[in-house]
Image 1: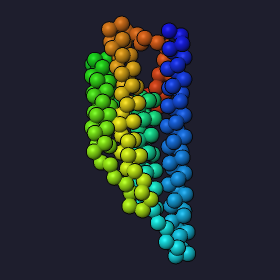
Image 2: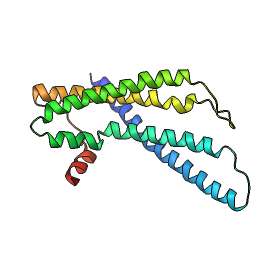
Image 3: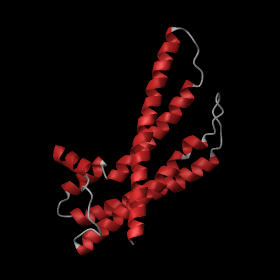
Image 4: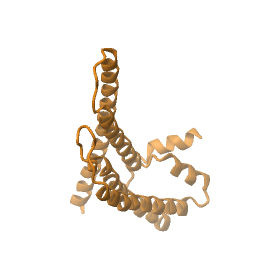
Length: 181
């Protein structure tokens, strides 16, 4: 059991690093492209494929950012709902986790079929759009795993009154968001 915990902890830290550095990389690419576009316009040099790269970086920026927030439990609306329904806090948390899991599974299902159905390439660079659309089911799968774990935790808290493990930080970002209200 200890090996499983260590493996899951390692995978969790890998997801954290990939999402963090992926978001940073996408932002750097977008800023570099913006700078290059301004310079290209200033010296009147055509800059081809700008839109295709911006689109790809934007898609992955949004998807990786969503996965990072999902992983941390830092989705603002979830904490607002559970904070507003203090009497129904634990059952509401279970219901929210079920809805989140259903949404993540829908992302995998619908995003996967959309990715498979829309096999096309970009106009200039000939990039297969699977790299754009494939972000949706990939993110959905990661989100589904985190949602399943959060649902298990919420059910354990509901029925046993305590989580199945020690919390690492009790979601500091989402706590701050609720206190901000």
